[in-house]
Image 1: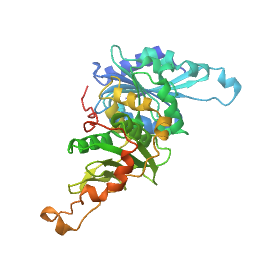
Image 2 (image 1 turned 180 degrees about the horizontal axis):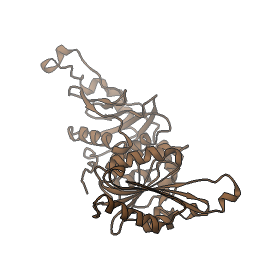
Image 3 (image 1 turned 90 degrees about the horizontal axis):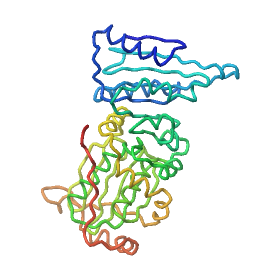
Image 4 (image 1 turned 120 degrees about the vertical axis):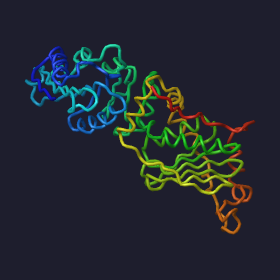
Length: 368
């Protein structure tokens, strides 16, 4: 059921929601949170589609806030609120309200959104584009327990990432961080298989890609080793190479979908590491609404500090030997001593001495 309201108020929107639920025969509210999407008209459709897909896992009331810019000075002084209320099949598993704000009311969007929030339910605010540099101090962000931005949509993503490291507040997160969850899981699992000391890391990916920067900062923060940031043509992240005293470890994804994990002394393995849609990223973020301390620690490591520590030699690739030398016909890599002797010595001069092998913090996978 779909209801259009012109020049309305938040009270009338609430009444339309109640009437819509009664009309379709489902007066009970079974939603678990309120998702507020702050966007523009151009990106509203894609953002709402992603939120609707994520609502299959997290039924929610979705409030889409669109601030319309009036062209004439006369229209800017005339405040108006138009609303589009969707319940039932038109809203998927929850409820959807599209709010279009005109004139001065656009500067006070929080006063329109506040009466429409579900009582006693968490609030999540998501900016698909044009996110504030300090989400917690934004009027709408102040209403939420979780604030989701997407630095990848910014004009200067690396600069904005550095700014947010200084304005971070518990509850802030970014979809650029969510995009590297499979990479973090795979790298942590790879280091769990070997008892090696990591001496240097190289992260390869597109230039000005915030996910690449965040992954490099996470590795530098958790392993306390120099991390080199190298460039490639993409798409996105393409490779991570780790120089260890047991030989190089490499996770290479050249096509954006299938990656190859190479560990010294083991056969190469193909692993699924595809680029995920926005709906999958939002569904992951909504599974836990508590502060992400790991993201905070990586973000506070700092882009500038990462660049100052990135002047390390490239990590050597994993060499291979003929199949006749491998076990059971597998092309096993050559021993680490012959392949990584020179670069390992050079990296050791810059890396701190560690008494035991470093371990990456496991990626959390708990549900609500």
